[in-house]
Each structure stands twice: as structure tokens, then as C-alpha cells.
Length: 128
Image (tube, rainbow, N blue to C red; front, side, top):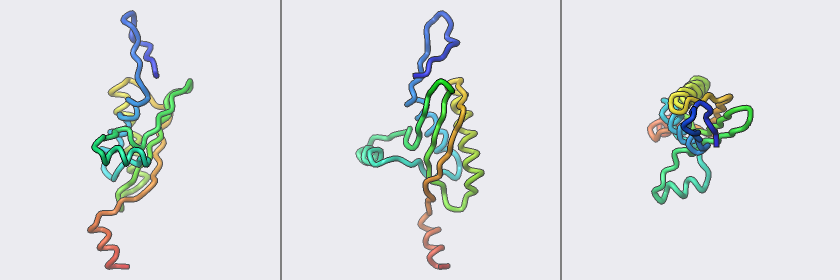
């Protein structure tokens, strides 16, 4: 849990790492050029039975140094990977700042795949 100090005499506010995962996952997935978030086997099984996991592909590390966020995602074919990666980092940082008032020390983007449209696949097959 991450405690916020500025609550005053009213008490404390604790933010669970799972909440930060959801915020980061939604912020990353709304960036143009991101095809999907990368999840493991258990996540895929849970989604097939109708349970949506909004923190899929996100790992949050809370320690004394601060917050480190690792995001694993698939990019759309044909986009500029450095540009989309930078946009993902900026969007996550802005969402985290707006919703929690927290700043991340590092937001690491790991591109683990490229997603192709069916039309793009057929076009690539014609030219190859």
C-alpha cells in the first residue's frame, strides 16, 4: 500500500498497487498505436470467461525510492515505436498525477509484439 501524507487530521489515504495498475493499463491502452496490452495465461483464461482485467500487462513496484511502472504491450503495425512509447509514458504519468497526485520515478514500456490487421496481412502476402 502507498500512503499519502497530506491527509491532515482526517486520517490517511492508502492506494493499492492494483489501483495504480488499472490506472496505468487504461492510460496505456487509450494511446493511438497501442494494439493491446500483454497478459499472461491466467489473464487470458479469465477474460474468456467474461472477467475483464484492466491492469493486464502492468507491473507496479512500490518501494522506498518511489513508484516504478512496467508496461508490456503490443503495438500496431506501421507505427513509430519510439513515438508511441513516449506517448504511453506521458499518458500514464498524466493519468497517475491527475487521479492520485503521485509521480512515478520510472515508466518502462516493453514492446512484446506487433499486431497486424487482416487487411495489412493480406497486402503483405500479395507483395511477398
